[in-house]
Amino acid sequence: MLERIRIVLIGTSHPGNIGATARAMHNMGLADLALVAPRSESRSAEAISRASGADKILHHAPVYDDLESAVADCRLVVGASARSRTLPWPMITPRALGERLPAELADAEARVALVFGREDTGLTNAELQRCHAHVHIPTNPDYSSLNLAAAVQVLAYECRLAWLDHQPAHSAPEASTEPATQRDAEADQVAASAEHEAVFGITWDHPPASHADLERYFAHLERTLITLKFHDPDKPRQLMARLRRLYLRARPDQMEVNILRGILSATEKHTARNDQA
Ligand code: SAH
Image (cartoon, rainbow, N blue to C red):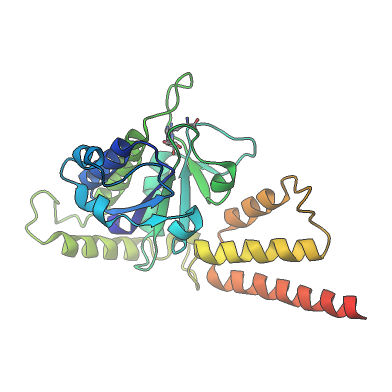
């Protein structure tokens, strides 16, 4: 389960924070780090020194230009935010996030991304609007912003607690002599049978849509709404943000997204025919 949780750092400006993030992840058993447009060198001496032996994670961390590419294959994307924004968005506590993970990751194909923002400005509204939910670590409201790697540490710890809770009862992880991968597989199986496809609360017929599927849908939806003259990109107001929030809240599955795209294609064909007539 832990190996399918991706930590995404956007626009990090201090190499020490990238190194300290790798250390925090390795301490908690996470390994999948992705960097989006970093503003510092992730393999510099400072990063490696702060990784303190966890530099393997730094060497394996891919670099992306944007958030979409970093989380394209993820079915759940959660943005970590130090403060609330103008448009309310579904919020989840760190504990509730951890508790949701075994069900979200019960399917061996599923991946989850936890997204962290820049040290100076956090995540942009556009980035936050690409997330299904936001997680806020409850802090002193007068001084709410944690150091980036400290925020990663807190959420990675919640992931680990949730994973430990799903260990098969007979194998206390510290005492076990089985290889970690086998223990992981066993824990995943227990989670899968206990919470079979519990993302939707009951056994479901199709997996949740991936981030890439949803982004293709949103792009198609925007094009169609412009053609229909329902949406004016010069006066966007918050139409697309509100529609994103609606669809992300519904957690459409892969079949549902195909149907929605089919409806858009039919609408486009129909308007093109009417325009010609
Ligand atoms: N000054 C920035 C905060 C940057 S801290 C701002 O005003 O938004 C860097 C990143 O650490 C944040 O983007 C967020 O992803 C994470 N972070 C810091 N404090 C957090 C908190 N209390 N809850 C959740 N994430 C937090």
